[in-house]
Amino acid sequence: MAAKDPTFRAYSAEEAKLYASARLSYSQNLYKKILNHHAATGGKFNLLLDVGCGPGNATRDLSRSFERTIGADPGEQMIEAAKALGGKTKSGADVEFVVSAAEEISQIEGLEPGSVDLLTAAMAVGCARGDDKHVLILSGSLV
Image (tube, rainbow, N blue to C red; front, top):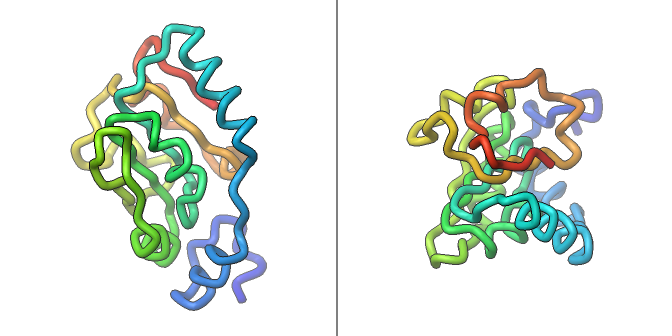
């Protein structure tokens, strides 16, 4: 297993599936606090971008509150695992999963500058070198 790869980019399909099956979701109380804070600060619920989404657990859990959701991860096999698990948004649309490093999120196809209402990074925040200011809406939240 690619134990020395902190971004999971080198994971094989089998390693990504194993990681996805063992990766627990965060508590519903944490999600509730994030969403309540987002709403209390004027955040809208149109577009969620989860950077470093891995197999997409948090992406799927939060997507139920948003019209559109994108999960981005630099690991191609992690994105394949996320796609296999799927997910739906509040509007019933499929969650979109794309291969993208945090430093390249402004280049995600169809992601307009200033369009992201909530940007989450969970455990990936330590791996990012910042491209969030280009996509986050002025009233958006970075969690």
